[in-house]
Image (cartoon, rainbow, N blue to C red; front, side, top):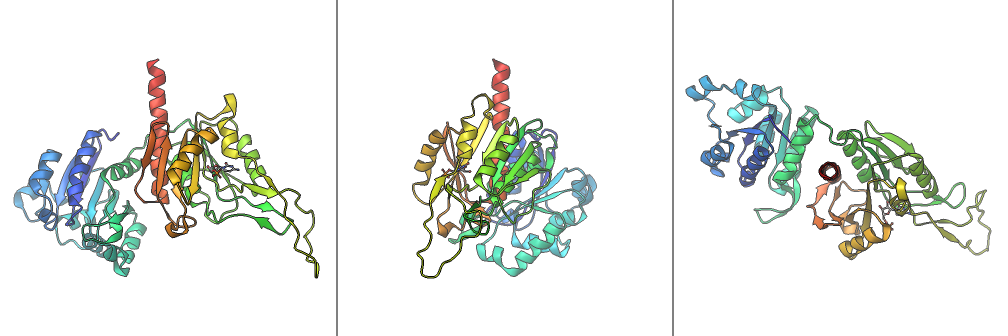
Length: 408
Ligand code: C5P
């Protein structure tokens, strides 16, 4: 919730400005007050009257208005806010922010503020990927501006790709993550598996897969951000350890299972690791030698333990919420629904890992969340955004479970 939080919403000139109306409505529903600054270009897309009606506050736009400046100067606008949100953040306003311009009220407030700033970019895909915008975003990130989105998808200009402004609910979630100091998962213990496993054939060779650990690590970080005490059991990866998380490094599936069972009592387990299904039945103690003229050695495989199913079917020691992943290339949702029952877990996060999606090793993910309530398809998101959403859903689950228990 955002009770008592004050948002200064800067609406710049992009077609996505219409979504800012919905954003105001959602923020106010959650108890925040919203005051708007509308740029001249923004006013070509939404009217001050709409913003005023939804925010129930005066809309500011003119830097040189004597009455505005005497009632609420540009410095006061920022002083009176807990957070500045730029939505839509066009290529132009990002460039003006990066360049330190103060050529209208919006830019001046952004230059004069010492409050946190969240930007939700929205622009044509080529403007977003242009070297100038890339450099501006990098500069702003270095200065501490937080970014949400943009999402991939069809755009008003009949093109496709990254550039769509994040949906209002995603922006609200990002605002809550920035402003809400309360930790909804405080007191909860979380276990996350991440990365691939390595199954030794001999001391120098192994079977493994392409999992990068990016998604699992991001989930561990997002759960910790919400206050959970997180143990991350990670296979060999090159991504850095997330902050505030206890990391157990393992190689094989057997070691991963042992580390999970050693983690003690757990409230929520998220199995994001790409565990090898098989291991060598008889790994050689010494390096297997190549012998001239001899046939290649036959490889006999044995099944690995299923860590997710083991945790989900652990009787009284079962975590209250067990979440698995389903990486599929075909019949994604049907397979995920089936997997949820087969493995005995509560939720399955199904993701399409066909080579064309670039999910494996990449930064983006398109997922469907399969729960007992049905299937929810999320828009294509960055892996950190998937993690933030999933952690928020975990927090919601425990909040609802807590309410249900209290009502009994
Ligand atoms: O059976 P499949 O590998 O498709 O299931 C994927 C899900 O099961 C993921 O959550 C993965 O982390 C988990 N899994 C596991 N142990 C295995 C195989 C998969 O925990 N041996």
